[in-house]
Length: 117
Length: 317
Image 1 (cartoon, one colour):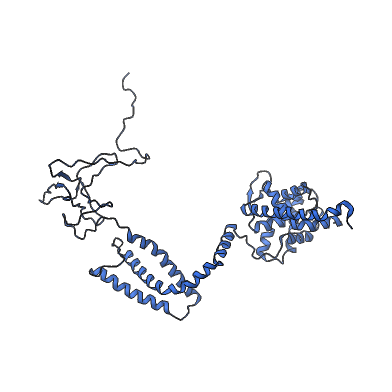
Image 2 (image 1 turned 45 degrees about the vertical axis):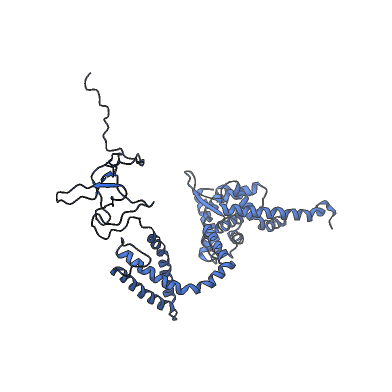
């Protein structure tokens, strides 16, 4: 990975839970599909393993339900979806994110205008 | 890439990942790796090339997986969310101040519990051995039954108190059994006590002799003077013989108020006192007429007994 990818990974670690919860809030998904949707939304460098590990952790913590959808052509797929606990976690994390990002944007305002040191 | 190669590529890659995570406790590893092969298959199907190209070496994959999962989890099996919420709720109650106060006070009630549990056990035994027995809170010492109750209760109370005062601590298993027994007695006590207060207001007939002095009292205080049976179809029935749960003829005390009753005489010359409705007259000689009744609506599930003629094909043409 180049330096940019490493940095992204570091920052992403803190918010991957939130991103995964947000993706699942839109629609139930199976693991690979979650990765795809995250990447579609601009998180290019998120690793498959990171997403899968996060999914299993969220499931283990009781924020997700899972069910298997049988399929004729391909393999059966295990879908994940948010339950009430997961929705609550998403709301709380989203609020935290909004206030954090406000604070950070404020701090960085001078910087991105090129007036920083 | 042929699908056979794909399948073996997946299998090999997965095996390497599992090996790299072999140091995890087995139940954690199981949760973490449950979907591993499924995911790898999806990636392989989409990527078209070897997995290592697309995902990096399996050891790196395993590290990333481990880091994202956070192997600092206590316990490998998923805890049911409802159970976890329940546990949290319980904890919030037990940690509260008033709960602490109640808990501190409870030991003072122990002697009372010893007496109460003995009493309940005696009641339970009575209930078990003679279910129709009229349970009264304080037994009648003048009946042999009641005397037996009192003696049994006294013995039970003494035993219970002695058990309660034992200083010798029980082994863990013994403690569990003791706690279980106490809880069981407490739980069973509730319905037993509930039963005690709700006997129908029809007085117990200690003797089966007709025409006895105690009138049957309805809940509103009136004396029961007659019974009007109806069939399911709403037809008033006559000469219906009624008996109570012990098989004794159910007799009212009809000579109450302003009615007199004619009992039919049996072939043995004895009056038949439990055939309803009774034939009664007012003091002025007028017969007592049947009251208007509100028949309940039977469920329409089964057709009534009265046969209905279905239209038959016309016999002649």
